[in-house]
Amino acid sequence: MIIPYQQLDPATLSNLIEHYVLREGTDYGDSEISTERKVEQVHAQLKSGEALLVYSELHESVNIVSKAQFQTMQTEEYNYD
Image 1: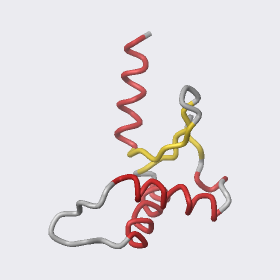
Image 2: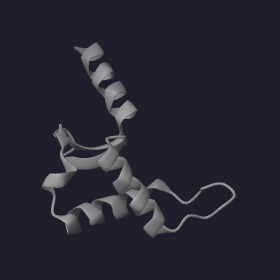
Image 3: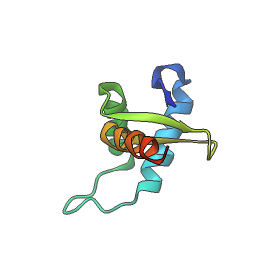
Image 4: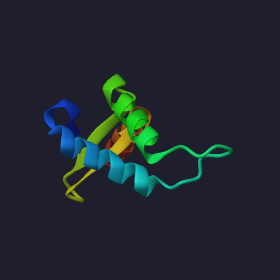
């Protein structure tokens, strides 16, 4: 289920994004990107619709995924039915 990011308290949204960024890893190639910058980038992706907040009833968790990942997840889910 997609959760509209606008419905979350701004502090909660920031915490979710920061947790996601820190969990993602730190290999950014030739240049290091600060956590703050990565948080800004993810927030911009949520705002533009490139990334989505997704709640998993099965795992009772919220995750941030790309729109393409979400579409793939939906396709795979329907292929199992």
